[in-house]
Length: 137
Image 1: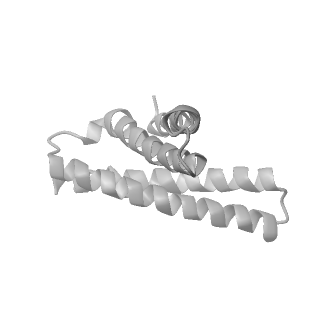
Image 2: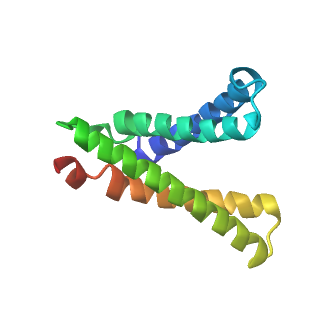
């Protein structure tokens, strides 16, 4: 299976994980806690980024993980969170530009932003997070 297809499937699984954590957090785990929905959303983001990292590490870029120590995996995880954060900002800016500059409606602008961000995240993952050079450090 091609690496880009695996990356897409992992991303789709991350959406499901995110939604499940938001639901569990807001409806069960954080019931009665002030700001429970906002906390559940934040938890959903953090958990889904982590599960995406684990799946990408093991499956999408599984051929690039030989002889990785704890330090290398920790660096990869930190880089993945940084990349995901930057991706969130890129997606927001691209959606704004799609609406304000290109004159698109909200959903097409958001879809375009997701496509742009997915491509950028794939390149960043391949060249920075899961690169063979990083694994050798």
